[in-house]
Image (cartoon, rainbow, N blue to C red; front, side, top):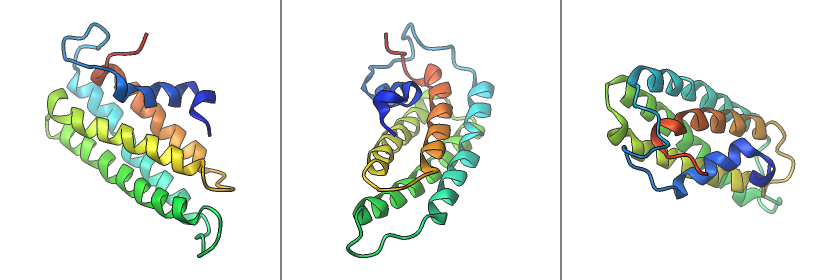
Length: 149
């Protein structure tokens, strides 16, 4: 999966580069209920991504992509934990300012996981999982980051 051929992923991956503030013109007004509802979709999507990765055969010493596979496995664990933290923080009533660092961490980790996935031969099924998570993050983007021009 190449971010340049996937407009959803490209938009999500570009988000950390944007300068955002609560008063930015491109932001939607904060809607705690709506943001929490969208974020509620993240844990099932990240669990599905983790389950897909667990079904993949482990790379053995000397196999191409072993180091990337191990790093990807760690990144997917981090994505899953961060998704749960973002959702639980929003459910607890934490707003934009408190959850923005969590959101941005998740964006960076998804970007890094995408890069590692590209280095691993024959990982069918993982692209769809990463795309599902990226789509949810894209829907959250309008509440957290000013959209790029």
